[in-house]
Length: 183
Image (cartoon, rainbow, N blue to C red; front, top):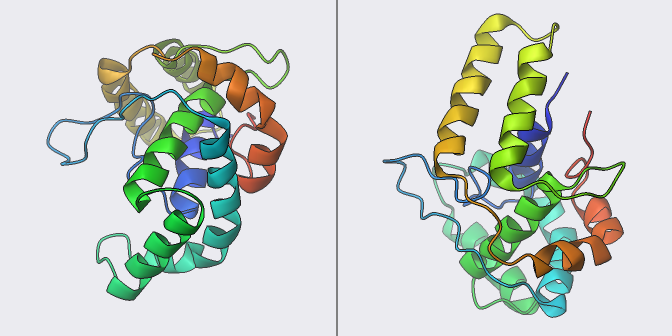
């Protein structure tokens, strides 16, 4: 059984949002990635993010292959996609995506209720602990990663982002398959 935790990270990696290695404020010490800059999202940003995903999807295999070795031509293509969709840079687009992801990962698909990132990580940890199909070695690794993420996870700073993401949830679900689908 895949957990929401892995699905969220996997879906974001596929669309090339390389800066999104953990939920919420998630940054493991020493990884060199800046922590999530929480921001108040706008309709224009969410719409631009959704639109960009359509152009990023065909690049998924190239992005996966270039994870450690940035290809200048691919980077130029990513910059063009970001700018075409109203972002100042790929980093700007990634940050919007991270803020959207934090909300999506905290939304319960049945009730639509939002759980704060620390609470969501705790819920996901309980699911992993109860999973009888996951090998213990994998379970231990996932729980260790979640425990690290929990140390830096912070509550959502801009609560109005929840209503905005819900407004575009169908479009986001279509643009980011499995993003808000919990198993």
